[in-house]
Image 1: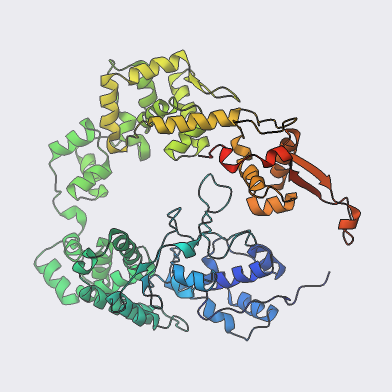
Image 2: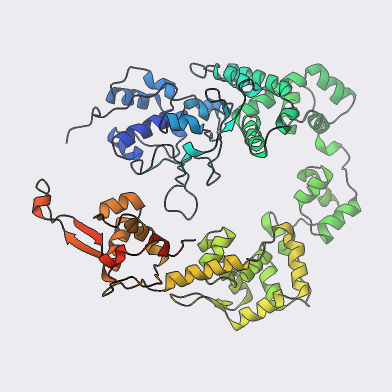
Length: 595
């Protein structure tokens, strides 16, 4: 097989388009996933989608230009320097109107942390998907042929595929043409981001424009906007000023150099004896930057141990020995660092507790003997004993552990492991797990534990420990929905064999609902497995099993493709499926809900 040199189908990058967007458009045009496209071009796909923009080697750019016969250097405008972002992964914003007009093409400047508005449509950019409330450009889509342009590619937990929300339908956040945000964004867009060896010129221009914007755009301008707009702007402004981001660190370093001059530090630290921590707090700067600035200027830094500790020895003994408070808690209360507290404990002859979670108060506390022994066994010596007990109470209100995990928004495997750990701590089985047709139910040991948890003393202890983190018990509607879903799944598929009319009550297990809805939405159409695989996204093996199950219950008829229908194809031919006459009479509304 000859080596691939060029592609027969090509897509030209749009002006200002990002590399990830262009590769997705090219892969979609070739009807293949992006990883397969890159593998065919002998390029290794990155792990995250932002690496197309920030970490694309120059050799890969030249290879793509050669294979697609693009002018040399054409793809340099689709990527940006990685040192603009540092170690923190960038987050891409979007304008729904731009996505609608360009059929899902993404702009390179949407990746920059200081791009917050669309000057073309006079609107604030969106940061998160309106459905899953997560950044829509996190992972590489492995199936671009199925995914429509402009969809959210985030993969929520416990989901087979991506979110799939159409981002072009997101309601815009409009701005007036004279809004100061638009004026500042136009000047920020004019800052060149290519061809710089150092990020200092770019960050200096961005910092200057942002400072001017915040001095002119007061809090009164935000108070007149709605809550959704205000939260979107605050989150985006936090991205560009966050000290974790590269530009946020640069802003802190530049302000440290500007404010802390040699004369100022000599006067405040050496003459007036102000500590560097106080100086850092007065300027809202990290203490480590202030200390490093003083060392760079050759100023003698006063050791922390020479200053008097800001706490009383009796109070320290009470908090650490009696109240079992951690070093972190005492450090937060007093403002002293952990090393200072540790040295003081050593001088007082107080033995240190083990490091890590074993020194937490929850691990050391012992309950009174009046508390039931099963509760004490589940709580003592563990960090999350009361959380597990509360989740056990909630679990017994549902028919399955899966329904409880869905209500708590946790993984099913993690919840099952927590219950198993609690049963090992107590030394007995607390509930019988659900089977095919039988919901879960508590054992005699579990019934006794539920009764003890319902007493006033246990309720007060649980509420005192969990506080606002205490999950409320499910209401009747949530329990009823879970019981209905379990009943629908446990019952068998309604048999339509030898029926002229469908029965009044139709039961379809939840696992069959996606395929059954697809078939009933086109009752007169013949389909085959690849069609259903493309439209539903279900695995082919699952579709084969479900089609056989529906055919055995009188929902489908099948026929094999004849040789005349496939003159240019070999093999045995496709198997086409169509609904039976009785199944065509079943309305979509008769199917149970998937919730």
